[in-house]
Length: 252
Image 1 (cartoon, rainbow, N blue to C red):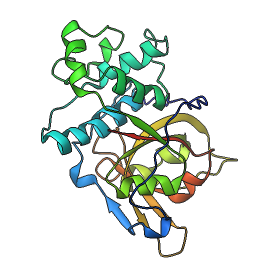
Image 2 (image 1 turned 90 degrees about the vertical axis):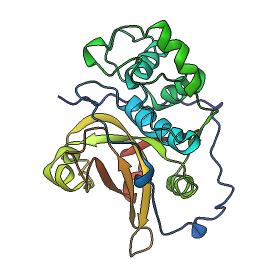
Image 3 (image 1 turned 120 degrees about the vertical axis):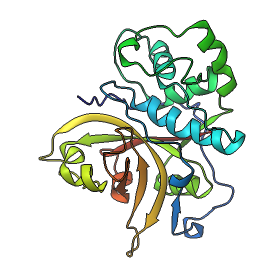
């Protein structure tokens, strides 16, 4: 059974903001960006509320590892998820986490290779080994930045930076259309049931035929059998409402 456990960040004026140095105006952005060809293989988080770690570790960090070091090393989502919960004092619970705390863990602690601390859901409460802790420092990121709006997300993607974000999951997200095509319908906020929060990784976008229309290409962590080979297409309208998406972050 899937869990939707990501929580919205609390306000923190210490957050650093992303600013594009290449695209000062939205009109300068390319019409489409697609980083899927540079992404690591899709993963499946299973029945653990570790979506933030799946997006941040197996998506964002492994992407940069491939780009910067030319290696396809798989990294430990379970290690990262334990440290997220340690930071939030919920180690013994499958509590999920905030995206900011997930980025903070990757910056301060890092993450070890998957082979050192494998993704075995039954062991999610176990403290990582000394070997895992030692290895994690090699995979830290230098920094992370908050993005404030859709234009910022597209600018980050156009510069080659995937973006972790939260999305409120309504019943329509789990329906047949999304499951078989990856096309996410806008929910009816009056009738669709809110199931909880989930973290995804934006890896591209495509402008629509009409001004203001288009969609974000997002990487999910529900396996390749879901959506379009594990990816989905989320209309821009989702990113114009805090009732639909929240907390956009990138880092490397």
